[in-house]
Length: 210
Image (tube, rainbow, N blue to C red; front, side):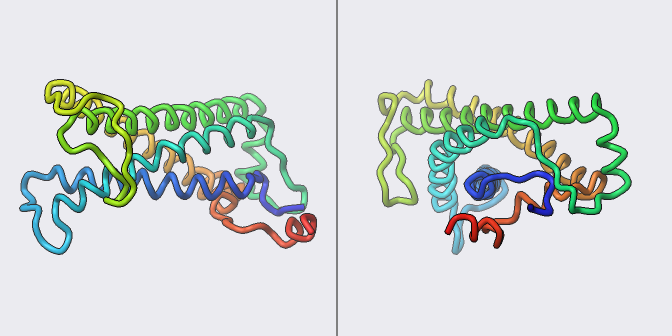
């Protein structure tokens, strides 16, 4: 039996990490390339950041869909190990069913909101780019189809405006998500944080698969 109270499939852990890297990378690129005080030249110029930003946003679309499918399968009561010596705060926390239930609802609400907003951010960026003059591809190599007629500046600006507003909402949701992770790590100390970053199968699981 695992010593982590919450077990997640390996696919969920890898998708979680991949989505985090893509989302944070896209946000960072978008923030830097939109900085009017930056000249946009150098080893990494504004065009390179724009290509990276769009590429990571496009890659988020299939990752969000896969992660949503995995998360839907995980909507069930968590299993807790009896072999782990939990902290006092953990035992206190899990003696209150209403607190556990409320926390579970908040967790799933934040995850659902993140999935919806991530998908909306990626879609509005894709549509805005399709309405633009240049289209889109993944890191300048893999072409990505347009889903709107080219060179409609008014529609492009409209969708890019929605894209920026949704990206800000995604940033706030990510902050809440990180705060929840730190709550598990520092307050409850139930090893959920460590379990999500265990990116390989444990030895007992490998033996079971043989």
